[in-house]
Amino acid sequence: MEKLLRVREEIVFFYKRHETVIGYLLRFLAGLTILGIVNGIGQYNARAADLFTGGMALPFLLLEAMLFMLLPATLGNAVICLNVVLQTSKSLEVAFFLFLALTLVLVFYSRIAGRESLIVVAMILGFYFRIPYAVVLFVGLYYGLTSIIPVTIGTYIWAAAPIVGGILKVAPVFDFSAIDAITIWNNAASVFVQMASGFGQALGSLFSAFVYAMAILAVFALGRLKDFDYAKEISIVIGAITLMIGFVVGIIVSSIQVPILEVILFVTLSAAIVEFARFFDIALNYRKADQVEFQDEENYYYVRVIPKVILKRMQPDAEGMKKLDPRLDSRTVRARVVTAPRERAEPMRDTLLYVKRDGETFESGGRSAGNPKDTD
Amino acid sequence: MGAEYDDARKNRIRVMTRFALYEKNEGRDDLRKMTYFINDYVYRKNSGIRFGVLVGCVILIILYTLHKIVMEKLDIFTDINYVEELSRIGVFVVITLIVYSIIGTVIHMIEYRKARLRATSYLNELQELEELER
Image 1 (cartoon, chains in turn red, blue):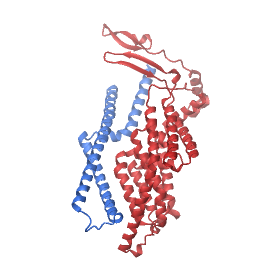
Image 2 (cartoon, rainbow over the protein chains, first blue to last red):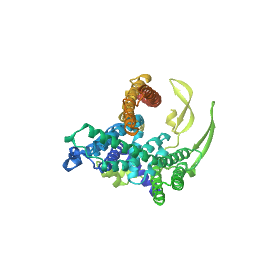
Image 3 (spheres, each protein chain N blue to C red):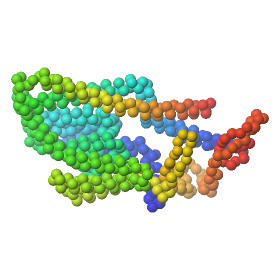
Image 4 (cartoon, each protein chain N blue to C red):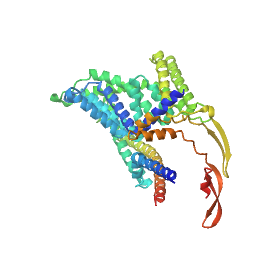
């Protein structure tokens, strides 16, 4: 166990040292993955083909991923939405209605939610890798109940995507050379009817969204119970069980098509992933938990103290010291290694000091390490 | 004397690192927010939200009209009672604007207050550091 904790400490230390770079890198990778998924649609207009095929494809993808990384969350989401519109531009009617629908999400939700709207992207990535449950459990643990909204939006978008894909396959290709107002209107009306019924069908995903909301609620409520040991760990397990039971009930009651064994497998995997993330966030020693009570003039305090697991710092040996600072000469290194396990100073204690200043002696409350020089 | 000097120097480096991190991350935003009074800040932010909501409402109205024409097969010249429809749309737009204004006000007030707490504590500590250095 100590080895594991040591590894954890090393990784946390590394993360804290490079937090900014790692943050940008993760965002870049997320952008690259989601844009890669969107580029899989591949139903772009011949005029936009240069952006997605040949030599321009990779630089354009990298540029978009960089924009997603650097821009604020709302604008980053806008980049993805624009890519979706370009990818579906084979049929300008479908692209137009998608543009309207995605703009609605941007102005009514993403603009207000800010960073929380990135959960929508995380949900889509989760669905792609078959572990949306990990996102659900994670946001239940670390975000508020408002995260139910992006989780629902992400679930709905994922459910609507194949329906729109189906419409795209049969939609007429827009021909710029033969623009005829009546044809455009007829095509637009036909696509509108198909998309309206498609978006209606996707409402079936709201049952899954409801199960996710219940799991978020369970994790959120249990994870914040301060009086129980291992509250966060228990909340993850209860959240996972809520997901499993929710889908089993869904299969029985509303005959939704979910492979239950797959759900159990991926929910378990997701719970393990979230527990792994929680372990890196904080490690507490519940065995040494203590309850203290004290009072001041105004209040009586019941405080539960749970110590963090903190390993003793290992003193670097001569080689380690040289690695840390190659400029050190061997004599200094030897001297430092010899004096490395220094004794800790005596703990500070409250004392009453008799301070002599300008010939007068007076009392003063203070803290002393027991060093007689302090009172001189 | 030497150890005390070392400790003081290390402490100062720690405090200054904390300041630098704050200035680099939230500090930039927080201090910019502090150039506004809370009402001005909320008003400015809400203006953007209201504009976005208006754009959203226009899109919804377009889709609603298309629904009437395409799905319900209504003739736009004869079958639609414009007074009734426009008043319905007007009520919808006003209610949406009010709801979003309330949500925006709550969100941005909380945001501003958090920023003010962080900025005040930063400025106080900065002042203490300056006094120590004198």
